[in-house]
Image (tube, rainbow, N blue to C red; front, side, top):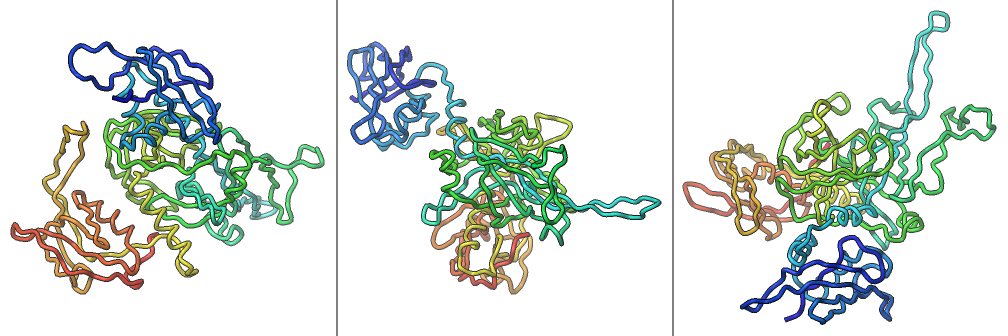
Length: 491
């Protein structure tokens, strides 16, 4: 039997003294616990890190091919990656630590360390015009720059085009007070980002040293963002989902830190799971707060641009502050589970994030149409099936095998409009919607919002079918070929 691989939790390169008991497996009878005595980190001939783990029974195991360079200081994470590479086992980082270490771990710190190279502080610059009345001079108007701040995560990296795509909140780059004529709309005319460890901030330019900020040719205050700022442009966004996508130079980011990377997406999330937020609270720089997911689904009311909309959200008790908007919400494996966007002003233990399902659905949608070669398609699009649904028999389902649970409900068509996709497929009022099949892949529908999430992934040329229950019998509709005419923009 091979020894289970393990490592220190917070360690640096060199020889690490450990006293952690393994709780891996036994062969029957009374077996003395084997534990790690030390780990030696060195550089292999190919330049990768390798680790020699020494056990209390006198044996040792060498792990090689881990993802980061020697001296990274993240021995536990590297050893975990080497473990996956060597064994091919499907196990999360948290499960790895819990399975092979019998001591309390510091995996939240490891999760944060893994995420910092994917997080940025954001400044969004817009032109606003303010008017004032003076009884002698009458009404005067002055235009200048307004700068708001938030955070973002690196969502995707495109090596071929040297582009890093960021995801943030729509309201981070949207300014309802913007002078649309001078600013070119409500979206920020310029956006700058700073990665963790190379942070800066815009400062007014005073080249004359007279204590007054210089102005540009338009009369606006000139700001210096510094050498560590990276410029980003707006790709697209959705106000109804509070998600926006930005893009910038990957080379510029790597010039500041060659280890910048896109976030790792979680497979899901659950109530009670640790929720770690990384953002720019009160414009004090990127920092971390921690809590748990309190509720996996809640509808909240937010006002943007004078319109109050209902938003599906994760409720968390992770502390959030002004400036946290657009930052990532991560689990203990350092995987993205949401984008933080709102808080309860009267109770700091009630805060919110856009759930991962919406983040990926909207962001992928925006990126698809931004890069489809059609200049007329910008933003996000989805099809409308043409039926309304209701939810009944909602219940909590606990899975003893995983130790987690989720809520399920019966989703029923309450009305079907004639001439729509649903009508053409033969759906009728009272049909229970069981699944939507896209290009042969079945997506179960056990919550009403699953339909919206699934439809975000549908593109022109795709085929869809709907599985439904009628009179106690499961049935499948014919296939429907989606056309561009079926797609409507998402605001």
